[in-house]
Image (cartoon, rainbow, N blue to C red; front, side):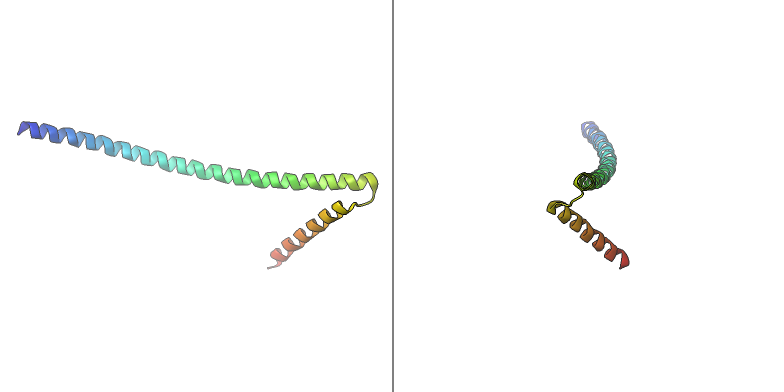
Length: 96
């Protein structure tokens, strides 16, 4: 009978340890999910910043080409037309 009680106590101790470890892992998982979410937001923000920088760089290149020769080549004109269309779409969205 004592042997069964000892065995039961061993199992109970192991179960407590496992439950404690489970709780620790759940807390760690929760922290990692929050960190992952923060990092995903940071990545999205950096992608947006990168896209904004690319657009600014394109505008600078266009301005340099225009200032260098005074004439618009067809590719620059197309790019300016695309920007104008995009601006028009933004204005339309703002009016809604």
